[in-house]
Image 1 (cartoon, rainbow, N blue to C red):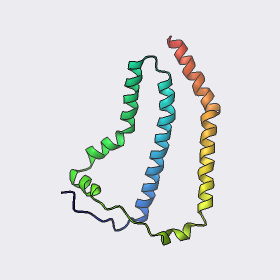
Image 2 (cartoon, helix red, strand yellow):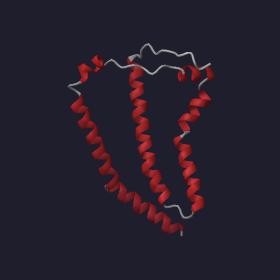
Image 3 (cartoon, rainbow, N blue to C red):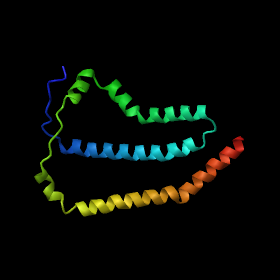
Image 4 (cartoon, helix red, strand yellow):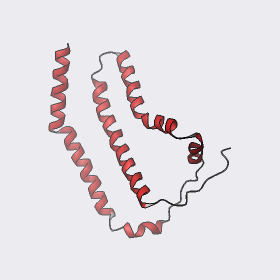
Length: 138
């Protein structure tokens, strides 16, 4: 019976911090998987290995869903599915309006640093290592 809806009354500060940490970790993991997955797939020799490597990357991406389904009871999964979407009162965020430009600057700096690292010395090292390992194998 998925017609009965649950209501989320509130979240403690610790739970909010945990949500931010998990969301940040998942974002970094997804972007890393995207970058290194493309790099990994670019060195695939034939179509069969390419398809197998794509399936392996999808498996890595779906590990969190697998853990959710295996480790959480069906009652808790049902309770989460039937939760109403939370509503956000915009007045709660008025006190953080002065922090928003700083947050945007931090996000921009993170993007720039990540781009620099991906195209800078580490990228050169990883390319020389991969090319060297590839040439030794063949």
